[in-house]
Length: 459
Image 1 (cartoon, rainbow, N blue to C red):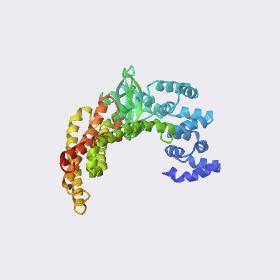
Image 2 (image 1 turned 30 degrees about the vertical axis):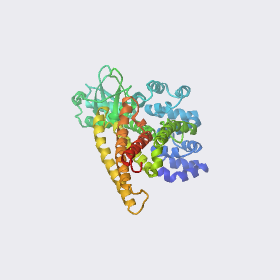
Image 3 (image 1 turned 90 degrees about the horizontal axis):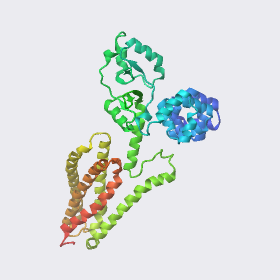
């Protein structure tokens, strides 16, 4: 929280152009804290503050900036400064930065790189967007199985400074195929004259360059790793992916799912960076769909217009009926979508989920139905608003709630399975969509139950 506490002071120094004090203060900060600071400053303030940083610290801080801030600085910084930063970025962070631009701008920025960095950048950008190839870095430590531990440690000291991670070394054959990975802890604890093959067990986990980013998230979560190797279609080791990049993917995925579940298209940029026109367009599509769906609610009520005229008291419970069904459906959808996302359940588990939600929905409906009946009974003890037939009205509301909550629970739990079965994102089974569906059908259930119990009395 240091950057939050000092933000007013930093802004004051920038306004006064007190560059010496600003340089002295900012160069003491950790790059991650600087990243958060620059996210809170304006573009003009960013430029002043960024140019006060020592070159190596500026390059490290650049990695922690939101892409929108990186893009602004790339336009404002002098070319020599931008050239240094781009060449100092780790390959995976450089790829993430370049991926946000169009082809022409990418080519311009690539010309600022050294020939070797440009070669690496082009090779990583050649992989499809959203694949592991875009996440990885080629900076790793590879060894041979006939090497001794002493040979390995000498190699680590020689090339380890440029490696993305020192948590593991990777054993390759003569054709550069990955044949094993060994934790650095095992290397350090092994006898100096022992060979690498004595530590091998042939059991390792690797990603493929063509795997989706979400696959990397699943494997990191499953095997609790901080780094995983990446191989091509022939099993040749081409890079590694580290947990920090996977955490970014997990955060972006969770954000997209939350936005879709809220009833809008996922945003391609952060909220603040998204133009208002785009924001409206992303939200309007689902709003129109949900609005058209809600029009069916009016149609359903119009179908029972005669019953409502005879028993106006029924209309008093319409909001209660609609909200209870929508809430139960949204709860079920939230639970199932999240369970599918983290791998707790799979498509084959739909029957088990159906049974559980059938039982849960029935119990929840009985709880709400009982509360509704008791409320009507208590109110009727000192009020005549429900008339002499209040027991039948209470029974109508109670049974309707059981049916509607049960239907909402089943709809909310099964829709994600249906949508995933169609090859779509289950998050599109959003809470508003489920609520709209249950609103319409809930009214039909409510008035149908009313016809059954109140025919010959109020109806």
